[in-house]
Length: 224
Image (cartoon, rainbow, N blue to C red; front, side):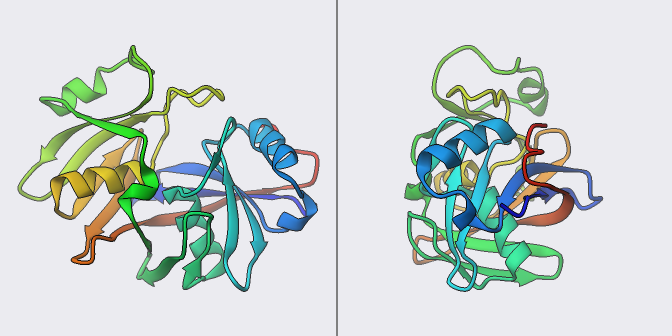
């Protein structure tokens, strides 16, 4: 194993925020779901992604507790790292592009099923939520910060075990909200992150964000 690259995905315009992502560039060095799941649990990031074929964009995504067919922040991060124009997670082909300092991926909201959105009356109401709120199941709490401009304040609570109490920034849930609202969004999530979205006429949704490198961890140095 060549080490784990750590990126910050969906950083704000000022470089703050961003959701940490573990990237194993040499996916072949960790074969098998059991070993990959164990590494993702050791890292403790909301997601870790394994690159199985950099040229073709074949990738495999894990949270600390489950394997995912699709996830926004790992795919945006890897598209930035590899300069890919298409990625291939288990859900299907995901086109990717770069526009200035923003990397975009494009997929289907159905790939992000299982995440429930709940609208709150105010930004203050979202900010006041405990982490996590009472209840079960994936919750995306949101409120309009500026409805006319499409600016949303959101917080994400996986509530599925694995030690991730609150997700700093999540593209998949932003896709679902974009489908529900039917308009482009600027989602200000977590402490200082920003997720951008654009719906398309064919039913696909683009999710975009800024990515910054964080560190490279040598083999064996995986725990946060």
